[in-house]
Amino acid sequence: MALLEVRHLKKTFGDRAVLDGISFDLEEGGIKAIMGPSGCGKSTLLRCINRLIEPTSGSILFRGQEVTGRDTDVRALRQMIGFVFQNYALYRHLCVLDNVTVGPRKLKRMSRREAEGKALHELQRLNVADLRHSFPSQLSGGQKQRVAIARALAMDPAVLFFDEPTSALDPVMAREVAAVINQLHSENVTVLCVTHDFELARSVADRIIFLRDGRIRAEDTADNLRNHYDDHEIRTFFGPGAAPV
Ligand SMILES: Nc1ncnc2c1ncn2[C@@H]1O[C@H](COP(=O)(O)OP(=O)(O)OP(=O)(O)O)[C@@H](O)[C@H]1O
Ligand SMILES: [Mg+2]
Image (cartoon, rainbow, N blue to C red; front, side, top):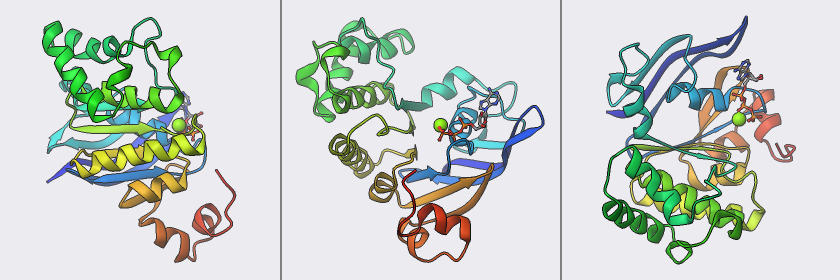
């Protein structure tokens, strides 16, 4: 069974359909990237799935269970989805270790000792355990992003959502984050990754969803999108010589 099944999802703001009938699946252990021009609805899609934004209509099944209903336990849903943003969203006044333990302690009611054990495990997995007593201002962008990923993983989510995880990073650090996402994939973590970075999408995802004007225009491998499409919009976005987005 797919971990996530999105069917005919619509979101309108006023009379504008930002998402206009989105359907796709994300398999357990799978990884998909979502790409598309600025404003096409990528972040809105992620936010609809974890109910930060209420979908207008359509269906979202999480492990076979509908999660758009009024009776859905939104808190439980959000705990199953680890969210990693472009700007890391770390707490500036907390050291790395406390940034990672705060979720398990407050939301999962773990003891400090148990939460620190979990946090250290995830920080080691992301290769930043030696930074545990540092504060966010003392870290590089790539290190902050690793801590943000460790913090998401410390909640044992069923899936990780990334929204532009590399757009604040230089190319070297962006490749580092791509390597981390590949490592997670090899450890069977399920990932949905919104990105403007074709190289990131190509290096981590089996398939890329191309979103434009609120609809999925294609879902295919990076190479097929780059080389085998006659469609003008797809060629303009992905084709050889396409402008960086
Ligand atoms: N709360 C809101 N109220 C009204 N319009 C909104 C709201 N949130 C998003 N939008 C509009 O929906 C459209 C899609 O926004 P969204 O942030 O999902 O785009 P995006 O694909 O993530 O863009 P980017 O690549 O720039 O991050 C935009 O035109 C945006 O202005
Ligand atoms: Mg966005």
